[in-house]
Structure formats: C-alpha cells, structure tokens
Length: 125
Image (cartoon, rainbow, N blue to C red; front, side, top):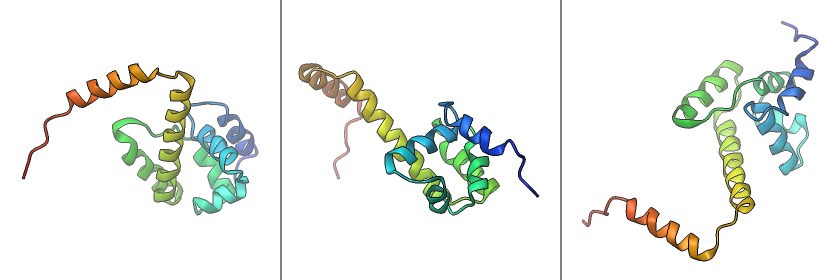
C-alpha cells in the first residue's frame, strides 16, 4: 500500500496540535536534537509509519498504557520506547510548568506537609 501524498504535511501539522503525538515527537526531537529518521529508528519503524503515528491522539490518563499498546500494535512500533518517550516528555512538561509558576520556599514546605498528611499511614512490619 502506498502512502497518500498528504501524509507528510498532515504529520507536520500535527506537530502544532498539543493533543497529537506529532507535537510530542517534534518537542522530543528538538530536545534530543534528533532527525525524523533517527526518531523512527528509535521507535523501530519507518519514517512513513512515524508520520501515521504522529496523527494519533496523545495517550493520557488511566488508559495511558492501554492506548500506548494499541498504537504500538496497530503501527508495529516499539511500545517500550514509545511509552518511555511519552513519560519523559510528561516529566519535562511538569518541570517546565513548575518553573513557569515558581512556588516560594515557605509555600512549598506547606504544600509538601499537606501532601504528606493525605498519605495513608505506613504499616510497620
């Protein structure tokens, strides 16, 4: 089966849509200074397959693992690498968000104390 003429343009457009995997891939490639070909090799797929995967919605929430596995199975990409890449980018996004809205040290201590208080007590052996 040949790929449609519009596939590469659609994948490039998905890089500008935050809900799409294309945006995650573009950001990852920028951070890691990777070419499209290098990212395809990392995910163990062709560039064309990477374009198709770019058009998928970004897995999130409680169904994250299930959705990653569905994408990996459907497009025959490495599920472990895809999952790791997505988790790395979630972590990076969290760090950037934290830096964008810094919390004063006193507030951070209060937030940590509140978080600790909501944890169930640890059972002693």
